[in-house]
Every structure is written in C-alpha cells, then in structure tokens.
Image 1 (cartoon, rainbow, N blue to C red):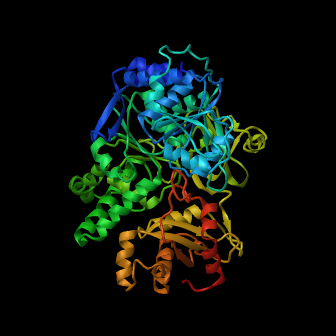
Image 2 (tube, rainbow, N blue to C red):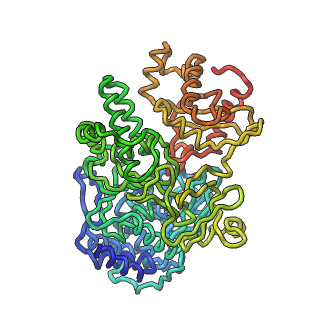
Image 3 (cartoon, one colour):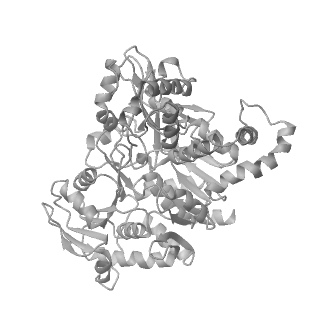
Amino acid sequence: MKQTQTRSAALSNIDTLDQLFAWRVSQTPQGEAYRQFDGATERWVGHSWQQIAVRVDAWRRAIAALELPHGARVAILLPNCVEAVCVDQAVLALGLVPVPMHALDNPASIGYILNDCQCALAVLTNDAQWSAIAAGCEAIPLLTLVVLMDGAAGVSAGQNQLRRVGMQDWLAGAPPSLPAQAQVDRGDLAAIVYTSGTTGKPKGVMLSHHNIVVNIRAVLARVEAGTSDVFLSFLPLSHTFERTIGYYLPMAAGSCVAYARSVALLAEDFKVVRPTVLVSVPRIYERFYAKLQERLAASSWFKRTLFALTIRIGWQRFCVRQGLPCDAGKPSMLAQLLWPALEKAVALPVLALFGGRLRAAVSGGAPMSQTVAQCFLGLGLPLLQGYGMTETAPVVSANAVDDNWPTTVGRVVDGVEVRIGERDELQVRAESVMLGYWNRPEDSRLALTDDGWLRTGDQAVIEQGHIRISGRIKEIMVTSTGEKIAPADVELAILADTLFEQAMVVGDNRPFICAIVVLNQPMWLALAQQLQLDPKADASLNAPALRELLVQRLQQATRALPHYAAPRAVWVARAPWTVENSLMTPTLKLKRNALQAFYRAEIDTIYAGKPGP
C-alpha cells in the first residue's frame, strides 16, 4: 500500500509520456522492462529499463539529425517488440507525434493513413512491406525517409522514390551527442491513432499527453499493478487499448511486458511467460473456450459431467463473493466440500493453460459472451471486463476484482463522468477525451453534444453505478417488418455454439435475419462425415442438408433472444475472415461494410430464395 501511495504521488507530478519514461528509468534502472523471443538463439531475452533508455537515446540522436519540426508525424509500422517502444519514446521525447499502425494492415489502408496525417518519417519492418505500400498508394509528399528494421539502404521503385535506410547502419551513423531536451507540454499531441474503420475509412484520433496520463492514473486506481507483475502483450500497439493499458500503464507501474511471438503461438507463450496480468479482447477467450469444448466433446461422459459441475459450483461461489444473484442458487454444503477436489482436478489444469499465475485478466474492445465469461469466472480466472474508446484514451469504465459484475463493463474510472442521452446513448465527459479528429473539424464538432459531452455511439443503461452496453446505435438493424435488432447480441449468442468460428448477421430492411458463418474446422470435418459430404468440396459448405442443420443450431443458440432475432437462413463462408484479407480490424472486430460488400451476391441469393450452389 505504501509503495502504491508513493507511486501515486509521483505520477501526480508527471505531465507527459516522456517524463513518465524518464521517471521509470530513474526509479528501477535494473528492473526488467521488456522480454521478447530471440529467433536466432531461440530463447527469451530480457531488457532492463536502463538498457531500453540507451536504445531510446540512439533513436533520439538519429531522428534529431533529420531536424523535423515540432509536431511532425512519425509512422511506426512495427510488430509489438522492444524496437517499437524505443522508436515511440524517442519520438515523444523530441516533441514529435507517433502515428502507430498495425504492421499487418493492408497496404492501401497504410498508404491512406501516411497521406492523411502527412508523415515525415516511417519506420517499417522490411523492404517488402514498403514496396507493397509504395505500389498501392499515391505519392506521399512530406515523407522523406523510410527506416527498415530488417534491411539495407536503397531506393524504392515506382512513384515513391524515397530513400530507404537499414536501421542498424542508420543508428550507428547518428551524431554522438544527444540533442537538447525538447519542450514537450501536456497539451501536445502524443499520438494520432487511427480508428479501426469497421464501417468506413479510418479517422485519426488526436490524443494529447495529458489525455493518456490521466487515464493511466485512473486505471491504476482500479486495477493494481506493480514491479512484480508480468504482462503478456499480443494486441497490436496501434490500438489504444493495448497502447495505454499494455504499454504505458506497465511503465508507470514498473511491470515487465513480454511480447508474444504470435497469436498462433499464444498458448505456448502463456506457459513459458506465465503472465500475472493479461490485456486481451474477447476473441482470445472465445478461442480458448472453443478449444475446451472440442476437448470435452471428445472426452468421456464422466469428464464432461465433472467439468459442468465445476463450472456450476465455481459460478455459485463467484456470485456469493460478489454479492450477485445467481440462477444456479447458492452452493450447498456438499458443493463446498467438493470444491477443493474439483478445483484441483478441473479448474487448475485449465488455469494452467494461461500460465497459472493470472491475477487480472482484462477484457475490452468488444462485448463478451456471457457463456464464455461464466465459464472462466467459474473456473477461477479473474476476468475483468471494461469499456472504452480510442476517443477516450481509452478506458471509461472497468470492473474490479472485488466489484465484478460480469454482465456489465463496470463503474466509471476516476475523473470520468457518464450520462444517458437521446436514443439511450452513453455520453462521456473527462480530461481523457480526445482533442478531436485529425483534419476533420466537422467530424470533431459532431462527436460532441452542444454542451461538450462525447457521443460514444453506444446504447447503454446504468444499474447501481455499473454500465451495461446494449449495442451500437448505427449498427441497430431494422427489419422490413419494423423489428429492431442489435447484431452484436445475435452474434454473441451464435458464437456460444463452438461449431461457429465466426458469424455476422444481416437483416437491415430485410424480411428476416440471415447469418454468414465460418465453421470450426475440426467440427466441420466431423459434421461432413456425418452428413456424407466431401469436406473439401466448396458445394458441400452450402448443401441443403447442412444448411438445414445449421439453421437449427443457429435458432437453438439464439433461443433466449426474441423470435424475430433468430436467423432463418445461413450461408457458410469458404475461408476465415482475417486482418490480412481486410475483413477484420486489427483488434479482431468484424468490418461489416467490407463483409457485406464481399458477400453481396450470396446475401442477395438468400433473400431472393434461390437455391445455393
């Protein structure tokens, strides 16, 4: 407690992110700051705060030699890694503005952002990445240099004839002395973070140093972290949720951040890193849940019964601790006696999949299925859902370990005010609210009410101080019969059935709801055998027998929703939706407009009542 109070007092005197970094280095210079996997030696390597400071200084010298004006934009297109942190900190210390971008975003989107924010410098992974961007975008007038983390000097072909330099040679050739300390004020831009663009072109959200620093302080008052904690980072640093909570907050707390190798290797990294704090989106928990269900489906009746009993009793115990009503009632005396054995045999082995040390598993960015949340909370995973937006730097509310209502996104954090406006819209007022959208004064004006509250675009209710999000206003579908449906609610219900890997529902101005789905591959193979279909044939995915069965599963999954929300037709997609094919955002949200355009012919076929192929 004393350490927390001392840190809180120190943080109250910090105005900017470069001050935050310098303070952390001075406090725990030899503490482990970052850890990442070295492919050459095939081992995890740790870096102290002092070592990171030395690397930041190298970047500062090199970038300062370019003599960029105060506030110039620097694009960072790197995967989560130590180098990305060092570039970011050097840019901030020089009074420049980082523009973080997802390294796996499509080249056209990256080119659009580079032009929109008029970047002067770009730091990329390799020449192939730059070549793809240069080939797919117009000239970028203010971009003068491209630094390649893995590469050598050269000149790009095509219309973007820009000088490219390899990182190591460029840093080695930097002036030997550090530049004079730049004057950085708390109101200066600390980032232009482009929104995911789920329904249109991304907008650049302008966040100041003060926006982010006050949000860090508020979150640390809700979710405690310290020098003994280890975060496992895998969400892109281009996303404000990871940027504030998975990067700057651990810096304030003195925690170590380990960078996961990839989402594909996440399960293995959990076991090696054994994090104590996890920052994630619901999709990751849903994937773990789906794997659990696959294993259970292949196990004996006894194991399935034991697992169900563990979840039931664990959920009862959770509700009692939180003082929440529970449909399953209170745990009986026999249940209490059984729990130690169930915990050892069932719960702890599942928690070991996350490393076995998690004391806070934070989920944000999208709503989570109650089925998934109840499963992990019942097993003892300290799952804390929260809510925020890029425009609020980002956290508005969050649950706490001792005040956890899993059907809500918790109470507002310190310094944030909320109210319910027209059409049940959640509106926010706080010092963490953005400065506006880059080069979009009209959008910036429309984002606020006449009296200065931020319009979130989310519908919500407030219950005993806890916020419950009910859907996006713009995404509410209205069928041709006048029924209003929140697609996210239907999709969450569908994904509780692990046969469905991904799902999007359609029905705006249509007579009924239909679903486009991606099937879980192992379960599809088993289903194809059951229906005597060739799993490799495209026609099998939309065979009448399969469609009939899937509609039954969809209606069963959505049985708790109004009858008009249940899908009456389905189309099975041939390939998963990913960031790479531009059908998902970097934080694994559906790009609805892109998906509906991609499947326009299939959707029209469904509503025309035509048979599938």
